[in-house]
Length: 144
Image 1 (cartoon, one colour):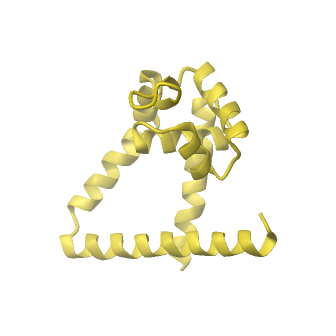
Image 2 (cartoon, helix red, strand yellow):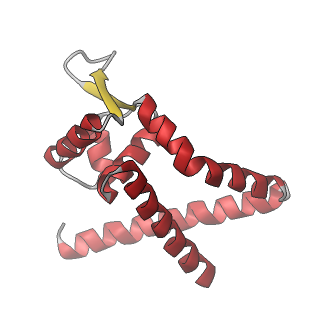
Image 3 (cartoon, one colour):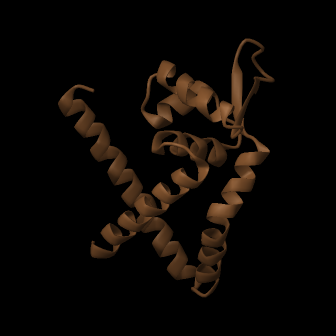
């Protein structure tokens, strides 16, 4: 438990550093991360993932677009909808900020046996599911 808490703390510090480097607030950085993970995302799906209203998410997207980090494009399947994707500037900034972390993590993983990596991945996936269940229960309890 102490290692998970320590990891959470240092991840939080990395997120704060990244937000400062990108010139964003933490919510906008999280939105950019979600868009980057998905590669292409609808504004509605982004709102759900952030736990924000669609109106608040639109404001987030306005800021990200103004900063040159995302592009809104017509949805190729639904002509009245849009999709969001990262702009080249965001990819460049991500490489500058997170590239060393990603490369270091891959180096660490390469030094581990596959069975150990599978066990860690299984634990982390289960822990993420637990956190999602706890958040859902908390929202139910407080009516949000």
